[in-house]
Amino acid sequence: MILKTDQLLRFSQFCKENELFFSSDRLSDLIIFLKKNELDNQDTEINFLYHLLPTNKLEKERLKDLINEFFGYSISAGQEEFLHLDGYKLDTMTDGQINMDFKNISDDLLNNFGDIDFSRPVSNVYWLNQIKKSQNYIDEIAFFDIEFNSALDSIVNNQNKETYVEMLDLALLERIQELRNQFKEAYVPSDLSKKEDLQEKDFLFTDSDERNKLLKETRQLGLILANKFIRYSNSSSKGKLNFRKTIRKSLQSGGSLYKTVFKPQIRKKPRLILLCDISGSMALYSLFGLTLLFGVVQRFRSVKAFVFIDGLTEITKDLQRLKVNNIKSILNSWNDYVKVDGHSDYQKSFDDLLASKSVFNSNSNSLLVIGDARNNYRSIDKNTIYRLSKSFKDIYWMNPERSQYWNTGDSRFMEFQNICEHYSEVRNFMQLKKFIMKINFKKVIK
Image 1 (cartoon, rainbow, N blue to C red):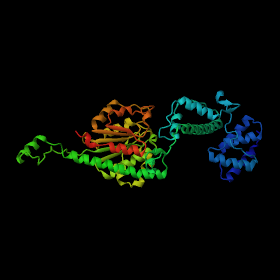
Image 2 (cartoon, rainbow, N blue to C red; image 1 turned 120 degrees about the horizontal axis):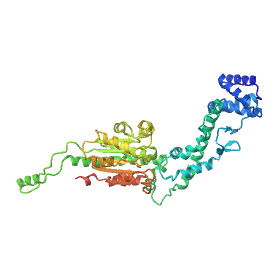
Image 3 (tube, helix red, strand yellow; image 1 turned 45 degrees about the vertical axis):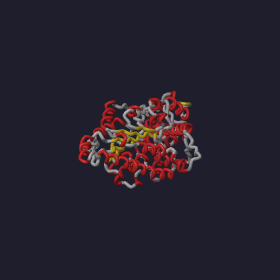
Image 4 (tube, helix red, strand yellow; image 1 turned 180 degrees about the horizontal axis):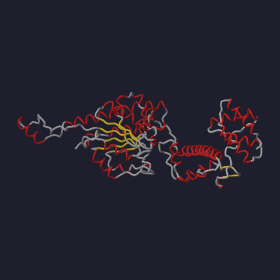
């Protein structure tokens, strides 16, 4: 060992005086390690000291300055970032160092992952997490998952793994962004007016000012939808015309239909059930969906509003108490609505809905769903689809994903299309407005 034991003890005391403390056991392990390995020169030993003593990045950064001050040796950026350990597989090493060609590695991982739909309204981190679950990614970092006899070797291994994964993930994110930019469709303003241009602009590509304008108009659409259902429910509450009794009554006035007779009122008015998917794949569209729900709830009390990710949560009372500027607080409390793992589960969410007794007073209720039907490759039970079709008079569905990507990958939208009264792509305000205007509850009264 080139560094002397008393020199290391003095350095440890120097670190302590500068508020960086290392335990005696840790220092003892380092001394044993240096004596055992008989390294070539003092600079190499100092590099090992730099890598072995700290337990986290903050300690490592502080130690770098103290080494420079005490030994007069400067640890350069990235120097010996990965230390050679004999336990690593040889095919991961290049000249004694771990293969760090992260660009090629990230390309291989992306190519082997399969098709990625970059038009989906999800973040780059979403795709990174999907890739990290793949077997190819797990295999790529598997060479770190070994046990060493030396505690110091294990420390180095863990540090190397953390750094390797961090740098690989960064390379993957950069590559995902590059690919996404290639697939991104540029928004080219037409000769329409500014207001009309904005109404046709994808919600995902709006800036803050544009978004605030559209959210105000979206709330107004919620009020319009509520008024539509109020008229429908008031009409339904009268009951159907009793034709025979009306004709009989008219005989008393010479055949004039002066008085009409209706069948007895239905005991409970129909209810509008609103569901909004707030999972990661819904991105910004959830905010517009919640704003629409807010407009309906503020105007119409015979309504139930829910959000779902991997399970259902009612937010009717929350929306009634909120002010319009605070709707985003629901998305800020995203973790409060996670039931299991935070990944979309339409099966579980609709099972929760069907099990909710407060929702089902009669089969005259209407259901409006806002979601992309991306189910993370989970299946949808046919019995659940059948029960949904029988439990609601009408089902309406707004899907913010481009229609050409429906029923691809993990999309299960085909399971729901046949039971919907009306469904459509809704990713901008113009599409949203057309969808709401097309809903006419009176047309489907039987």
